[in-house]
Image (cartoon, rainbow, N blue to C red; front, side):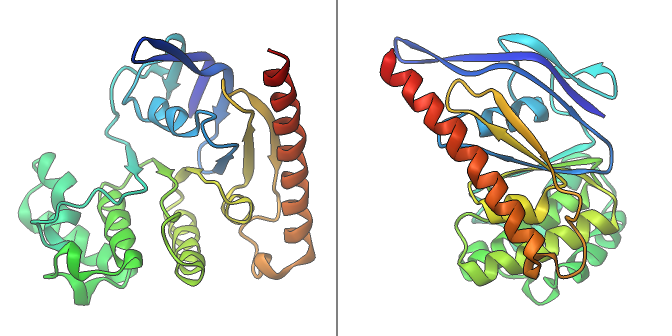
Length: 258
């Protein structure tokens, strides 16, 4: 569905040139869920932005349905860490923004959002403003805006990182239920090993900057009932943690030599 072919990304930081990603080759299959994890500054967000068509690679190519990605695609939805809600608009208006930009008729917007709001338990918040919402409710509104677009692929850049542990686990359940129900291909960037294991059928481990794919871990039990409480869940977390430690340590030694 989505592929990155020998992708490099370099950007300027003042007078300095920074290589964010180097030689990334990745294939995202339709209907599967992926989690990307790695040390801070390894290019995880840059990778998501490349997939979304918001930035272009310095070298290499990104394809969606065998078409080169040169701009954002209508079938792609992106959820950011900071929610991206407009403070002067109500919950309903924020959730409807993408549909309005696509000039969807008002009645169709009402039909789509009515169903999405019910799924996300947001009906009682329709007329509130973002400053009247909890962090979990704000993230549900961001989810509602993304899901209202009926995306083929959902890209998420650390959407739950600012939430407390219980709210975070609750929203992980919500995301898992929705991507399974609507059969949405999803790619999640996270710093949390447990979150990566809970939500990713495949866990993509990036090295320290410049980010390269160090390992891809198959997670065949992801999505099974009660997975969070199984010994296999903790074993998979341990496996991912071990791979992260190995690759981060080797990269740190390389940097020290340089």
